Image (tube, rainbow, N blue to C red; front, side):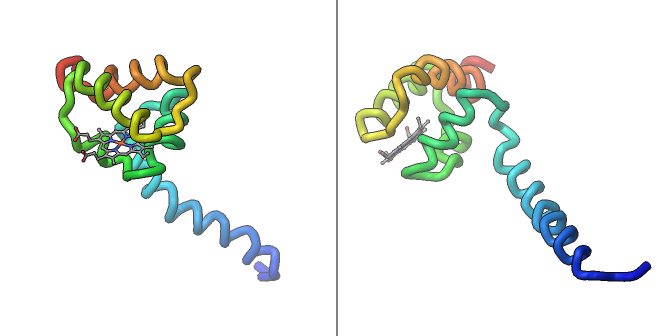
Length: 98
Ligand code: HEC
C-alpha cells in the first residue's frame, strides 16, 4: 500500500484517542453519566480532584452537608442543578445508600 501524508493525519488522532480513552474511562468509572455528572465534573474539579468525592465514605446526611459546605466555600453550582447533584452524590456515593 502506498503511504502518503493522509495517513499521518488519520492515525495521529486515533493514537491519541487510544491513549486517552483508558485514562478517561478509569477516572470516570464510578461516575454514571448524566446531567448531574456533567455539573459535578465542571464544578467540583475547580478546587480539588474528583478523588475527594470517590475517596470519602460519607453518609447521605454528610453528603448533603458537604454539598452546602462546598457552595459556601464558593463552588459555582447553579441552583437549577442543585437538587440533581444532591441526589446524584447520595445515590452514587453515600455509604448508607448502597
Ligand atoms: C471553591 C472551591 C471548591 C469547590 C468548587 C468544591 N470544593 Fe470540595 N472542598 C473544598 C475545600 C477547600 C475542601 C477541604 C475542606 C477541608 O479539608 O476541611 C473540600 C473538601 C471536599 C470533600 C471532603 C470533605 C470531608 O468531609 O473530608 C468533599 C467530599 C468535597 N469537597 C466534595 C465536593 C463536591 C461534591 C463539589 C462539587 C459540588 C466540590 N467539593 C466543589 C473546596 C471546594
